[in-house]
Length: 437
Image (cartoon, rainbow, N blue to C red; front, side, top):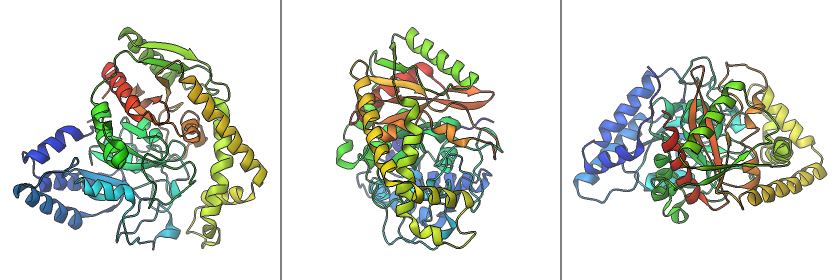
């Protein structure tokens, strides 16, 4: 049986009306998590979740107005602070870290009526794109066991794709929401930089870190991002439910790294379908796009090494060899190289914004290839098409565009910084044309 994501809109309506009890919904999610062998969760809050569900059911019976995510079961990535719960960011050295309060994003979810059922597995400290974690174990892709789901928010994407929970929180420093969304066949969005607070998130690279969300469709993403953005998010859910009419899309032609043949063929077919549906596609040249990955590495490496300097002194076994090596490289990078990288990032951001003067959104594959077996080489190539938009702070979203030998691949849209509502409307239009599930 193929994985199947849950529909957030239909669930919230059923929960708010009482057609579906919150306890029944939450219990169903908990039972699916317990039966799953994906290793998508590192902690499951069974008793806490059911108590919260019972309280929400009682509030509904008492006539209290439901919040926008009333009763919705959610997973949160292990790098979000959660009051009274171990919040280790997938790093054994942080296994005793128990915050006294929720991350701001988690607080907003609860305030909107969501039920946090557990913490999703991730790549250690978010420093990687496969979610193969030597401490908590690897996360399996729900489309093929033994293959990674992408990362670093791999547990969140796998959980949503498999229908364990309807939605999940993730973080995205170079593609860590969009990459696993692409590889698991769901929708993942990194909104504009600063739209969702990162307060209470274990940082990787503070200047590049974004909070994002994963859901089964664009409308579900709109509901989540609207809540997570607080007062700045008004209208995002509505925008995601109203497909834009005839958007003009810019296809980036000089990616610098060609996608696999299967992904390239899927992308070409998606472009043909969009043209046939009346959407305008034009070629856009983007000089320097292929230099984004080394620029990002020269920014996040020193930032990570500074924020997590104490981990260099952690006991052997508490930090993986790969993370320790990345911390050492970041610490050793010359300050002038870091500063030069920031200047180049600014130039790329200006070029990406300028490219949107003539189009409504940029269009490209999310990743150059689908999921690969555990232990495969060259995982950093997954970052090529996603990391530029962390450097620019522009909103970017990954949608399913089809499958290569049974494994999903995503299509990415990026818009103007601050233009999240416009991007969601365009994504809804593209989703309607492609109709991939």
